[in-house]
Image 1 (cartoon, rainbow, N blue to C red):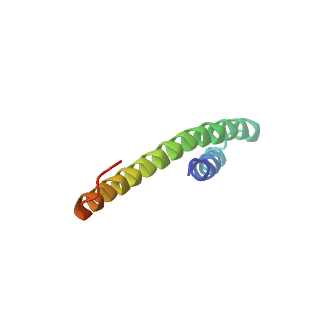
Image 2: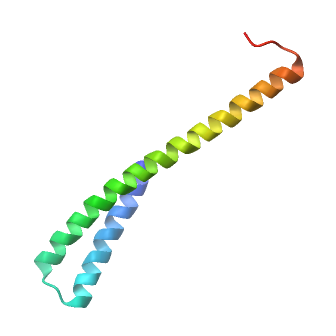
Length: 81
């Protein structure tokens, strides 16, 4: 999930910076430099956000599964070993 977020946010930020530079009439080299910086920065942020989101989801599903298994175990009268 982290790679997906990085793959979306990085190019999106780079494209938006390039469009902003074209609209404002900034120099191409400076716009390209800022776009590369924004692309790498937002890709890093996206990777971290995606990795955290994935870990939260996995942990939530794991907790629900363990709770359901414990309830099933109690319902059938089996003892935990």
